[in-house]
Image (cartoon, rainbow, N blue to C red; front, side, top):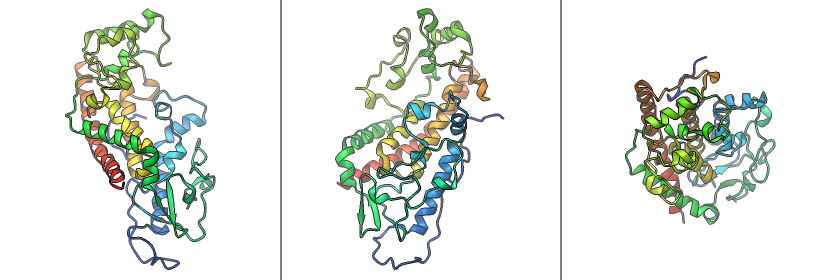
Length: 351
């Protein structure tokens, strides 16, 4: 099998259109405008869970076999979340859901909205049903059967986060992307490791060996603008970076050409939790996953065990290929960034 990186691929239903028709069952005349009836939103929740399963299939298979996955583990460790959280669909802020008559709960649901993780293939027992959203954090219920996110309760807990994320996303969107770093951040994280007697960052072997890896760092300018990559540079590599990002300068330095800034859109979706529509969460996860594969393909590590061709950024051809993918990711991220900005604006406008 050959994995093609950096290109959009189909991973199950992405947009589900539910035909509008007559309301079934009990009279819904008391529903607020825009409320989704069960026959509308339950298929959306089911399609969302199926897409989440498809997007996480590689990682779940490795986990079920008791193996680490040097590429995809990052998506569940650096961004600490569970497959169950990805499977859980939210309509987003401002959308009310009418619960089915009887208010059936999803198997395994808890008052926090948690569900058991999904280490193996999904089964009917963990398919999404009309889970007990009335007990979920930051939600309110009207007439015992219409549930929606309570923006006041959410902002009381997460208001500072929403404002920070909005400021960061807006600042990032205002800048043009830069495309000359060539992914050297991963190389800088292992620069002169053997010479200093440090353990290697990853168990994967270095594609060019230690001396070859160090030579690539020394032959190319390092221009990393992302603090959460820069902070993992070796001490010997830190001074080689033309930029010196910090947490305090993050809002002023983040730019849409940065692979890790674009991966972090997934992190910001997680931070905003149920205010983020399910399709946006999975779009952000899919982008982060695709970027992660390119990030490792362009890294100093030998990823051939994962049936992935290296992006040899030490060569002119490899640099051109890296920039091509980087531009594609920037375009995808800009669209997601605008959608997430609208989520922030809707929340803050509800105050």
